[in-house]
Image 1 (spheres, one colour):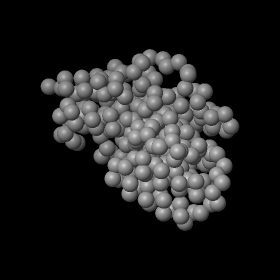
Image 2 (image 1 turned 45 degrees about the vertical axis):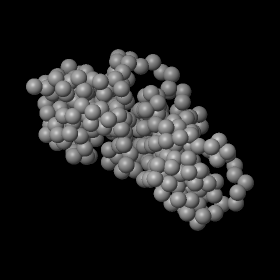
Image 3 (image 1 turned 180 degrees about the vertical axis):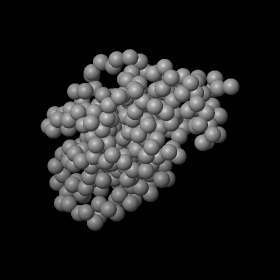
Image 4 (image 1 turned 90 degrees about the vertical axis):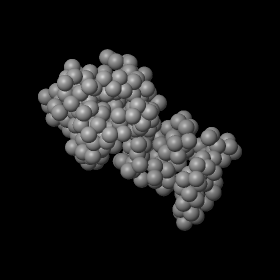
Length: 276
């Protein structure tokens, strides 16, 4: 594999992160969402991150609003445990109600906000997920799991420029953060910046060589860059790593769960199944 940036990736990420950090303090990152996307018009599992369907509105707590309930961290921890158990059972409304109660009882617990926001995301309520995860990052701008989760939800929502700034901030805070580099690759490819997509995918591959998703992201971007031979060779390596990708249904479902957009999934499917 090779990228075509021709300059140190980390130094360039610092420039992007300055934009992201500046927007977070105090204006928020949403202004990036309307920037034009050059090139193609074209997410990701965060199972490795800390516990990062539409509930009854009566249970909803506006993120960041003052709460009248006295703080009770011990009881909040119990509600978080209850919420996780309910989530594992597929009871999204019950899980969210319990996790919201945990946030009410311990509003300064950033991990609790991330857990609630990610549960909203898994339940399919992306607006609530964005609101909770933004409030978590505003509460602690250097909280890497919160940045990871927020960037993924932004990416899934098609807010690619916002996802770039968020994941860049996360990558600079933790250069071993494979999640951030992998999702940066998907975002850059969707924006039409194939060389950036290749470079960030390469970093993700180096950090987690047994994960096929960054390898597929690199192959997708390499084809955009014009390196079809390299792209096809990479797809061959992916099939050698996990033969289940030779099944079309598995491939498409897995890539959707891993954060690839529908156009990206279509491209990968078309190319991979064109292999001899």
